[in-house]
Every structure is written in structure tokens, then in C-alpha cells.
Image (tube, rainbow, N blue to C red; front, side, top):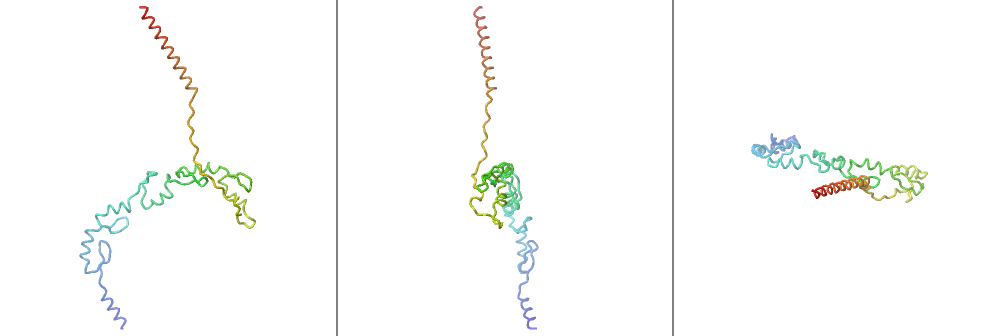
Length: 208
């Protein structure tokens, strides 16, 4: 009976609360009317995250937290929630390093580059053979393990370091010497004919 009386006293001592219909917060009942008027007039619930935001700051809140992002690399419009994933893994124009030469290229060009780069060969000091770079790791596992199955630690059997090799420069197109020679002969011929015609007309004028 004593315990029941103590619980009743605590419940009576706790202030009564009411839920605001606008922000769904629990407010002391003695302040609920004043709070409700202030809340409805000054606060607005964000439709994207449900946060109560001052009405005058709603546009700023949207721009900073929910507005789509424009990717300057691929020119696509990305939802803000997907922005980090787009930058790190999805953007086709993000710069990535070739696993064979470590040269950086846009991701959209990397497959074509690695198809060529991975076919380059490096000399294996242990096997005395040239191994394609794309096959180097498998070659190490298959050919350079101890009888107990562990990889040998010899420095000669580590993947060789390779210098960063930029794509080969584009060679300028060679001038077409044959066509230039023909144009030169044509120009000389036209000039000669013009001189002859001018000379004939000049002589005719003098005869008159």
C-alpha cells in the first residue's frame, strides 16, 4: 500500500504534457497554446527529412541538404543522397589509376587502356621468361610458391615496379609531298601561260 501511494504521488508531481499538432513535440500543457501559435507561425516541416525548420531558412536548408548536385565532370544532375557514391564510383569522368602502370585516366577510358597496358610484358627473374602484366599475380601464385603452399619471399619474386608511362604522343600527319608537288607544277604552268598571253597582247598593242 505504501508503494502504491508513492507512485501516485510521483504521477501527481509530474507535469502534464500535450503533443503539438504542428511539430509533434511534447510540450507542457500549461504552454501548449502559446507554443502552438508560435510553432505554426514560424516553423515549417521539411518534406524531405521531416525536420522542423524556420520558414525563412527553408530555401537555405533545402539547398544545403537536399538540392540535386551538378557534376562538373560528367555534367549530370545527381541526387544529393547519391553524390558521394557518384563521385567515388559512378562518375564516368572521374580519374582512376591503371592497375598496371598507375597512369590516371577518366574511368570511361580505362577499360580500353588496360586491355592494351595489361598485354605488356615484364621479365621474371626467377623463370627467365617474359610474363604479361595481367597474368603476373596468377603467375606468382602458380609458379612461385613453396611446397607447403606459402608464397616465397625472395625479392626476385615480387611484382616489379613499373614507371608511370603516359600514352604515346600523337604523331603529326606527314605532309602529302606528291600533292604539293603537283600543285606547284600547276601554279608554274598557269603563271607561264599568263605571262605568254600578256606578252602577246602587249606586242599587238604596240603594232597598232
